[in-house]
Image 1: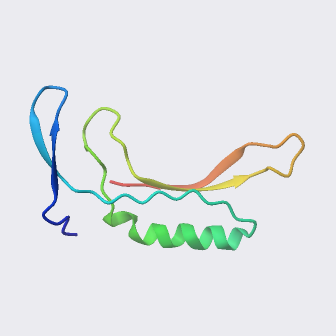
Image 2: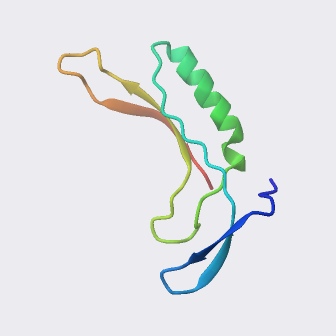
Length: 91
């Protein structure tokens, strides 16, 4: 993927100036009543996660991209927590 000619200059905590490529970020947080719809969207994201980047790899607390599929028990009284059933992270 060609990030294009756009870059930004960033002064790192160590006072080094670093030129970073422009990144395009996608964030989605959706809830579905139909588990098949949720699984279908997760599967579509799983097909492209291999092309996504980890920002600042190797740094402490590197922010990894991820997709997560959860089962949320909001129909219980009191509402139960969400349980992650599937998760994938960027390399």
